[in-house]
Structures are given as C-alpha cells and as structure tokens.
Image (cartoon, rainbow, N blue to C red; front, side, top):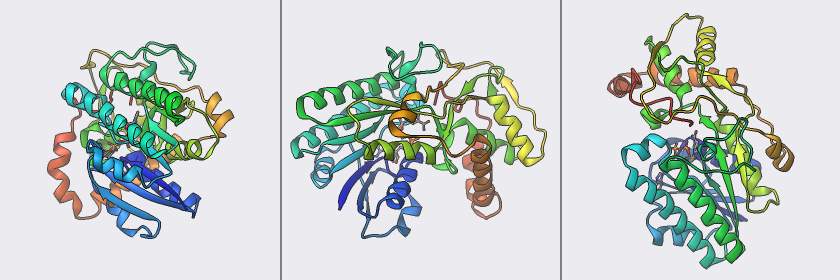
Length: 338
Ligand SMILES: NC(=O)c1ccc[n+]([C@@H]2O[C@H](COP(=O)([O-])OP(=O)(O)OC[C@H]3O[C@@H](n4cnc5c(N)ncnc54)[C@H](O)[C@@H]3O)[C@@H](O)[C@H]2O)c1
C-alpha cells in the first residue's frame, strides 16, 4: 500500500485530487490534511482514506503525518493573491513556513517525492505562451513565496535526494467554489451573479484572457506527476487555450438563453494581467497530459451545481447574506492571474 499525504485536501484542487487518487489506484491510502472540513469526505472508504482537520503550520502534526507517508501532494496555502495583499506578512510567512515544515520532515523520514502547488503568476513579465524554461522574477508576494518554495525544493532535492515537482496552475475553477467566497475563480463569480439575476461586474473591457482549467483536469496533472518518473522540475497546469472574460459571459448567456450585459469598471489594482496562457508542450510530452473538460462543459457544470445547491433547494435562504457580500464583485474576483 502506498501512503499519500495530501495537504489542502478540502480545497477546490484538493477535493478533485482525492477523488482522482482513490479512483486511479486501489493501492493508495490517503491522509488528507486541511484546516477546513469537506462534506463529501464523509462518504469515502475509511480503509483507504482519513481526514485530519489541522494546521500545516504545526510542525509536530506535519511531522507525524509525513513520517507515515511515502509521498506528499502539497496544496495548503492562502490561495488567492488578494490574500497576500490583505495580509502580506502572515500569508507570505505561512506559505514558506508550511513548505519548510514538510520538506524538513520529508528529509528526516526519508520521504522521497513531493508534488507541490506553485503558481503561473511566477511568469509575470514574460511573453505568451508561458513555458517552464522561462526566466522568472515574480513581482508580488504570492508568486515570490511560491518561487521561494520551488527554490527550497531544489535545495532539498540536491542535498537530500527528494524529488520536488512544482506545479504552476493557470486559472483553476471547480464545480462548487462556494467555500472560497469572493476569492473564487471569475467563472464562478460570473455564474453566481448571472444565475442570481444580477449584473456581472467586469474589470476593464472584458477582453483580458485566462487559461482556464477545470479542477478535475488540474488534479489529473498532479496525479500524473506523482506517478511518472520525473525529476525535480516545474510543470504548467493549463490547457493551452485562452478565453476572454467577455467570452465567458457569452457562454453563460448562451447556455442559459439569457442576454445579460456586464457592467465594466476600471481595474482597481495596480498589477493586473491582461493575458494568461500556458504552453502545454512539456506536459504533453513528459506527463502525457491532454485536458478533457472544455470551457463550455466546465461552465455548464458550474451553472448546474449552483442551480441545484443554491437556487432550487432551501440552502439559498441561508446563503443570501453570503452572496450579498459577493455581488457586485468590485472588491474581489478577477484576480491578477488566478
Ligand atoms: N485555484 C487556482 O487558480 C490556483 C492558481 C495558482 C496556484 N494555486 C495554488 O494551488 C493550491 C490549491 O489551490 P485551491 O484553488 O485548491 O485553493 P483552496 O483555497 O480551494 O484550498 C486551499 C486548501 O488549503 C487549506 N489550507 C490553507 N491554509 C492551511 C493551513 N495553514 N493548514 C492547513 N490547511 C490549510 C484549506 O483548508 C484548503 O483545503 C494553493 O496552494 C494555491 O496557491 C491555485
């Protein structure tokens, strides 16, 4: 039996990774660690899966779990760059400290492989599409702390023989991102607004693009990196296709047979990406990855999930206040890149 520790397991990417791992190999035993519970975990096979509600900043907790693992998939971190703007010291220190906790425990217990979430924001300033071979010099704290983790990974790789694979997600969205609230992907924010009969707020003119990838496709890439015989390196997590915010709104309108026009507002932050696009040559070649979920299919799933969970059933009543804080989304949404 191969024991995998997954940190940040209850998040958008983490929940898809757990499902993927359990489906792909009956020999896996998963220890899922996160500081937020996830309802759907209660139905998983207890012989194959355990959930630990805890904080990765706690070295002794991390150490005890790593000591009982054969490999680690690490996702736990503040997930939006806005969190680093709002709490710069805490977010930056947490990201690096958590990673050091894991790497140091791995060294101590001779655990030899980690797949960890970096970010595509590390590429900022480079030409499109982004390639893993590009020189990176991150301009803000989220991407800087992720780059530091990539560098820390390289140090442990050469000093302790740990394979540390850094995954650089583009713009990941999932069927249900309600736990993320205002930090959810812009696809969710637009769907939530438009299905609720509200006007979506778009920063700029809506022609900015992102390489949107569904969490299930992103999870597949993490699992391929875990299973393939790769060395310490970085991989993009994207589709190689860019879609503009205006196109997202058009797709939602056409799927729902509506004609809602967005409200365009000036971009309220200083560093803002106009494009985001992955070059998928390396991941196709080394990981054999090809995305399965089209943007139309992904958006259809987000709409379906929102309608079934929050519109048709009584949960909507409880969520009214929550969604009022989300809409309009002048404050949050449409993060710099992810
Ligand atoms: N979603 C994206 O578009 C995107 C883009 C680039 C990078 N990433 C990175 O991928 C990773 C996962 O992203 P996501 O979208 O699934 O985020 P998410 O916010 O949905 O999930 C984050 C998870 O980490 C856990 N967590 C956070 N701090 C913790 C702590 N101190 N101790 C224990 N658990 C903690 C949360 O409980 C949650 O389970 C993050 O590291 C994020 O920076 C995501």
